[in-house]
Length: 277
Ligand SMILES: Nc1ncnc2c1ncn2[C@@H]1O[C@H](COP(=O)(O)OP(=O)(O)OP(=O)(O)O)[C@@H](O)[C@H]1O
Ligand SMILES: [Mg+2]
Image 1 (cartoon, rainbow, N blue to C red):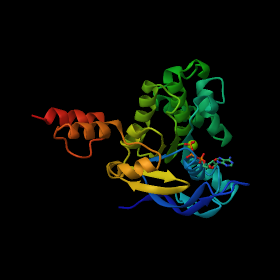
Image 2: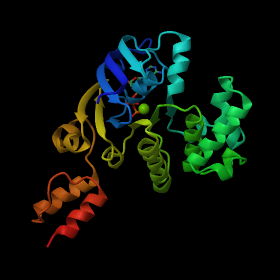
Image 3: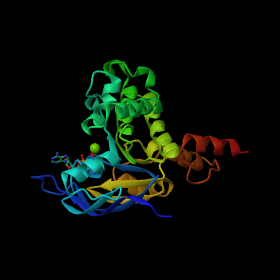
Image 4: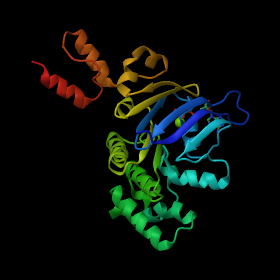
């Protein structure tokens, strides 16, 4: 049954003094509980769209409903931000306090939440992201991946229905990257939080329920990752690449190895290789 949590109809956004809109006529629906990835070359409008979802920016055209609410007034914007949290790229830019748990409490304090409720929610959120032991630590002592987990905890404490991750793994090493990606996947699967995952990593995009490719402010391609990545020529023209395992599968096929179409991940490749006689 359809249960849309994000509904965009011809959404446009133009920065002041910009010659062209950064987001143009974007129409899409995201269902509650979906994990949607957004790819697109630099400047294609991904972060602008993310900020529209979070009501940090308001559309200059079209309509956008997030969790049933169209942000028009300041109060609406607060409500939208409460239901749609955002985790950014640079972990250092999101930390505002000198102690982990105070950092997580920041958003709730701004909303005037009673102290005992803040305590409960922050403890719960830090436990959820596996950072309870570091509650009293200084964020400056943490790794990049741990800082991102603290940022996620701060968002979780607000009990959002949607979390937008805007290249939140871009500055992390491979271990930190997997850690934060898996955290987002678990929050999606186990807690039903809708995830919008903006990335330049094809391997991450391959694991989403649905993939959107942006180009010059528009949604150029959309569908299941397997269908989208199958359009190799279009993907390349949009300045992107396909997952490494798809390229390897194509090379192996050319060398005579009988592999089925649509292999995208290392796990799928391993299964298919083990099946070969
Ligand atoms: N604050 C701003 N003022 C004016 N123009 C902006 C501003 N922020 C972004 N833009 C422009 O809007 C367009 C879309 O930028 P946006 O940051 O949304 O792209 P992106 O897809 O997130 O890129 P990247 O992959 O580099 O993060 C670009 O042309 C960019 O130069
Ligand atoms: Mg961006």
